[in-house]
Amino acid sequence: MKDWNFSKKESRLYMSFMYVTFVSLLIGGLMGLLQTLARAGEFQLPFGINYYTILTVHGVILGLVLTTFFIVGFQFALLGKTVGLSDKQRQWAWIAFWTMLVGTVMAAITILVGQANVLYTFYAPLRAHVAFYIGLALVIVGSWIAVFVNFRQLYVWKKANPGQKSPLLAFMVTINMAMWFIASLGVAASVLIQFIPWSLGYAATINVLLSRTLFWYFGHPLVYFWLLPAYMAWYAIIPKIIGGKLFSDSLARLSFILLLMFSIPVGFHHQLTEPGIDPTWKFIQVVLTFMVVVPTLMTAFSIFATFETTGRRKGHKGLFGWFKYLPWKDVRFLAPFIGMVAFIPGGAGGIVNASHQVNTLVHNTIWVTGHFHLTVATTVLLTYFGIAYWLVPHLTGRRLTPKLNRLGIIQTIIWTVGMTIMSTAMHIQGLLGGPRRSNFSNYAGGEQVDTWISYQIAQAVGGTILFIGILLMIYIFIQLAYFAPKGVQEFPIAEEEEDAEPTPKILENWYLWIGITIALILFAYTIPVFDILKHSPPGSIPFDWPIGR
Ligand code: HAS
Image (cartoon, rainbow, N blue to C red; front, side, top):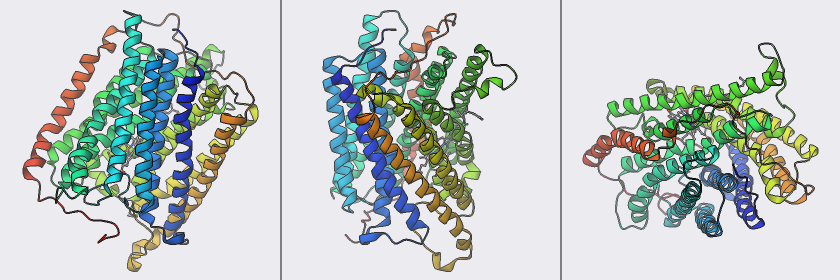
């Protein structure tokens, strides 16, 4: 595989995505801190700031903006490294960046001036100002431009290298972008056809059930869109950092294909308590949800196998002798590793959520918030941090010094402690019936509420520790971007074993895998959506915040 060294112009492009990522981390993290303090009941938000404004900023900026900018930037860098980026493609990549940024700024201003207190899922019938929806649409359009640039990058490489299998990371990026494109069609349709005309007053009512169904058609693959870049690092970058080789190119590709196929037709597991959807279709989508667990467990197996084979090759003996010799003092390994460990309880919680009847116990409780702080805010985010520790200095021509590495380890520990406290408290309070998405309230002195308060305080303690972790991460980012000593920082990509079995050609048969994906989506959604259109109750008029605006 040819290794393309980045030009200055290219590095600047990829870094621009990183700047937006870390600014988002700071703003979103501050909102998170304020939220946990307000929910503890001990702190009043200053200047009459509305709790739901900061909750919306937190969700949109961290869940949608930080993730999308990091992913698009990181994936551009992966493709730039493995298949190259032409000048024309770079110009289009800039157009993608600016379109996304303009959309982000529009949505952010609308939220900050209190005209879009609709949370990151923007459920109807809560109505936001039209600028919020247009802003979101622009972020999606910008990301689609990135999708097509990425597809083009691989296509051009394929033409220049006929008959060769694509580099693994390029293959993975293409899968993630194919999934993102297919999934975001749903939310784009909902925003353009339902929300914008309704928000402008051209349509008097909105079909709430349809809008939520289209959102979750997008919303579940969205979580895998966040996760797959972490998997890219686990499969193809971590082995290099620990001094090993790729475990199996074929297994990695197969697991990505399965994730593409099974991540989309499962949105109903977010709507299990939603009336108006036939339980048979909910059941079918729950079964498909459990299919997503299969490639995830394949990933766990593959990572363990890489750790073990690498350790044994280095001569470490005994059942777990190889484990001790993993590079615990290298933050590029430690941060993603903690992310992997967090995925064990995070994933187990997901299986609880997806288990149809048990979902009734946890749905709309703060348990769900605990679940996604383990998955996205720990598994995914710590892996992104792990990537940033080498990617940022690689792009700025600097080095991750031993001192910054040590700070990174401290950051990882702070994050782990803060998140363990906060997320455990959320899970327990959820099981005690504590609701999510709600400001502090003593619910008119309800007896059950007394059992929640200590957990709300624990969440504030965890949230404060996490915010310290965010400040430290921002400090490290600034150092890596501007002040660390000049030098060469490796872009680690694992190679295959010399005697690896050839990867079956069928794994690159895009028509086949995308065809099956579309067939599964049509199977899982056609009849229920038809049902929703035919039997929906009357649409809803908008509810504005503050009510009566
Ligand atoms: Fe989830 C709600 C089900 C995974 C994110 N999820 C959410 C929401 C978010 C989210 C943001 O079925 C809230 C949405 C909202 O605002 O309403 N989730 C699942 C299932 C999985 C799952 C079945 N979720 C994720 C991931 C996310 C994420 C990943 C972000 C990145 N989730 C649900 C359901 C709901 C839900 C319902 C709706 C709840 C409701 O009622 O509202 C599965 O994909 C999980 C499979 C994972 C595993 C773990 C495998 C472990 C691995 C680590 C290996 C470790 C190693 C190291 C090798 C089975 C791969 C070991 C080392 C040692 C030393 C031991």
